[in-house]
Length: 484
Image (cartoon, rainbow, N blue to C red; front, side):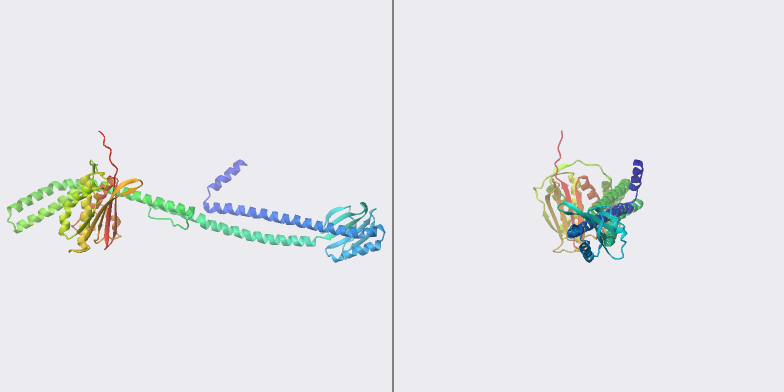
């Protein structure tokens, strides 16, 4: 028996939740309704039975009291008249009066009723026969039995009322059963259906490896929390997958870049040197001098690209120092400030000297600053080719707290052309650029992001196309412990 139960439970546990909920709700609901139905009918049965018995006993006592005098004076005619008065009670079928010796003294039997059925009463008590209830009681006078009264009532009204109660109760149970069905459907829609949809979506994602899909949330209950958790998990998986893909691409690009850079570096230096010789030997302003100068210019551009490629491909950690962000920034600004002023760009700087020091590689962070300022310069020049009151680059710095850790935040805010929302998520990809052909390599922001990530910091970009671009750098202020 136990093994059979275990087998049933094992098979049940393997069923889909689509069937588990109805198989739990429906049988339990039907069993509960059946027990309630039996309990209600049984209670009504005993209640009605008790009431009718009490009523007939009371009738028999009253009739016995009224016929006591007739028994004492042996007046059968008076007894018959007394018994006939109960004809006003339609449910009373018969009333039989016996003397103290058990001999028939008087009787009243309603018309069309079998007389023999009521004359064969065995003694005092309650007796159910066919559709009748008979109650027999002794009649006492001065605590002495002087006779017996037997009153019989029809149970037709009793059974009619019971059948009516069964019908009403059955209708109530039917509506309750329909309510259980509706409850099962509601549970399916509120619980089973979302879980099944979540399971189906999980199978699709597992089969297609498409982590862009999301589950639809319908409520803020536990199922809604489950959906939120599932969607958050998908977002994290998607982010990790993109990071892995990007890491693979970066590794491959880094290897390729290093190889290409080394292969190009020596020939391009030779070209630049030969072009310089031609430029030096040719007359200034001549066609040969102009061509040589162009070769040198383009060669320098290629050399700069090679330098960026090599910087991109190197992943080794440089020595870090505890330095002031204010000092690094103004060192970078000195290198590019003249170009900004020449282009008519208004520079507004608000970086305090009192900012906490950061443990960084100063040259790398300076390179990041120069890359971001150069991008802002390009955006402002594209929007405002000439001087303009809104041709502004705002640079600010301050200390912030994140999870009880001190950080320095540097913000670069320009009023330039902004970045399209279509490509803003790609601007940090290697070799992706929004600049015109020949004006950018697409490595500046990618290299900058790698540098900031290597310093346990964060680089974020916010932009509205045609209005502004805001780049924020966040670097931890944790002081490195020096060891001897």
